[in-house]
Length: 193
Image (cartoon, rainbow, N blue to C red; front, side, top):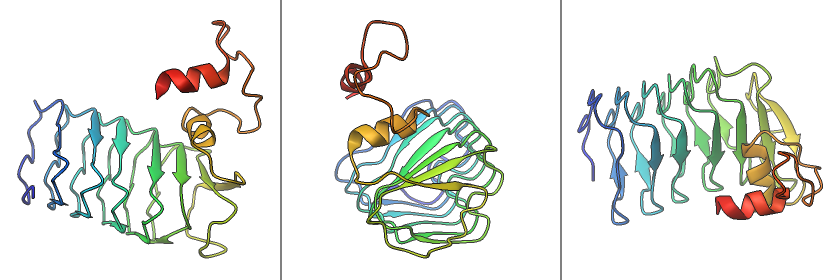
């Protein structure tokens, strides 16, 4: 376990390697770690406390554990540099203000059903932000996703998730070279794996 407030305010902390044996990240554990740019949360983690990554202003990349069932209040609030997030299929609840004022957050990908979403969970995110979900997704017909726009992507595929995460049209031909670098979208995707 990482205890409550364990690294709170460690502005000089730029990277963290979490062990595969970790099960819990306490409340406020990494709050105000402004130097942190990426966090990979292993699948062994089943619980993250409230405001655990709140005000990590330079946090750009987050990989969430597949074992999580909820994202607590303000867990990622004020993570101004976060541009996209994939919500694992086991998440049943996004608490109030979970991603409050993540002003660059423009892409959310729901791997499973649409969770119960607390008021303001996505308040203050990027204008025109999109939430992608699979056709089989179950959940409320009209979840409190404001200001996100819901887009049904049909069948789930990691390639579609990658396209969404890079802000690309999900209907693009995978053989097209969109960057002019001689590589197809599928080749670009493979290089990112």
